[in-house]
Length: 100
Image (cartoon, rainbow, N blue to C red; front, side, top):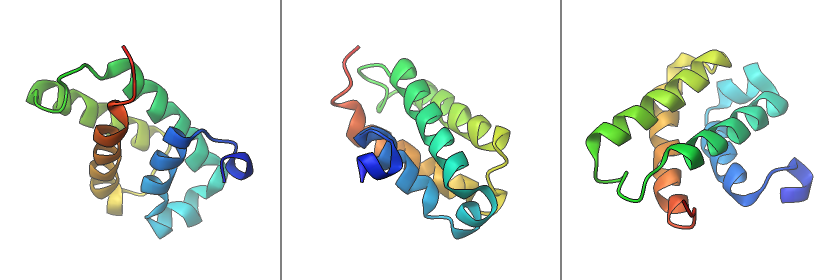
């Protein structure tokens, strides 16, 4: 699947979170969702700290970062809040493997 989509495992996790919204898949298409997943992966990797999951200020900043990225790509607003939460849940799981 990595080769098929051209994404690494972390990017696929975020892509899947974004693709749960059928209207996003219809309106934006695969290529834009891939771009968003790549950008979010990069931004979150650079922005997470060791204790980010327990620090509300850091969580809030990451939430805004993801929301703004989705808005910039015109991600459908009907499920944007849900997508932000899914992305942050994925980040919680994946960030344990990200080294700073």
